[in-house]
Length: 160
Image (tube, rainbow, N blue to C red; front, side):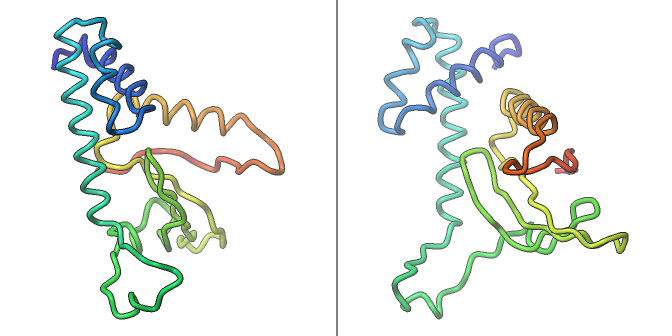
């Protein structure tokens, strides 16, 4: 993929992802105005995204909260649980969405006690477009100050 097409392809991909997986393919060509270069690039990114979604679904445990049949089943263990990010240790997963996962974490540097939420972008979604969007979201949140909106304490990147 040529670098000059990457940004355009990522923007088109985001528009295509607003449609159901079954309908996405029919929106690529019109979004690219029939130009074969971006079509190929968007198809590549779409394939990577769908592969990432499929891998994620394979690793999510299927649990029926109304059933006791899963009591002996092996539970999926997230590799970030127990890992330290900066001054915080990841305690548990809170929520999972299209861009990533939100974890509950505890400050463990012995300076003071604090529980926080940490949002981590999932692998495969770490394209330039998504990272720019994530940074913009982070900046907007940092500028907000309201009792019913979470406060941004910090932001950054991990080595991986």
